[in-house]
Image (cartoon, rainbow, N blue to C red; front, side, top):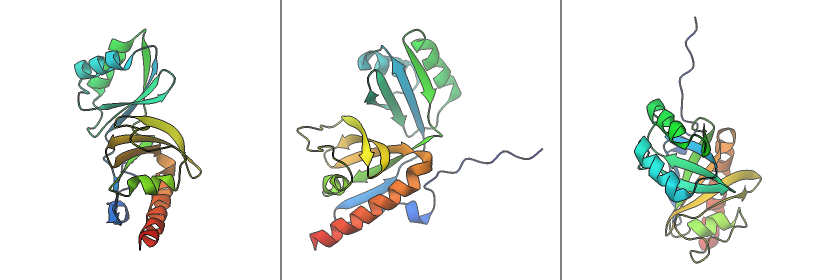
Length: 181
């Protein structure tokens, strides 16, 4: 019987280890866990259930009407997922998207300028504060953008489009660097 293929991060390798320059840092984030939660549960109640199930370090991002992504750097533990599914039974559904989506970090003083080259979302902190997220397009790709700090963002994209998004971000960063000279 053949061995099953081993999971390899899609952005693994020297080309994707991180790029810095012109006030921008691109970083392939750990492929920890990403859960899609759908249902009539408030974010505060969801946060409480996440802590009980062992997802205390995870962040909650709005992904649509009564939809959230729960993202974290730690690998998904089946027992924690089972505990969360049981706790949310009758209130929400939980789908593991850990192997289907990838997160990319974009940070630095020019991060908003870089992202504004690819999306129409207003990323000004007064409109898009820390913790806020939006489903949008970056170029031709569907992406969730979440603000994780003053000048830092996390982009979540379908796994099969991660390399394309990375290449687009590198190209936009190079253009931003030329413009700043």
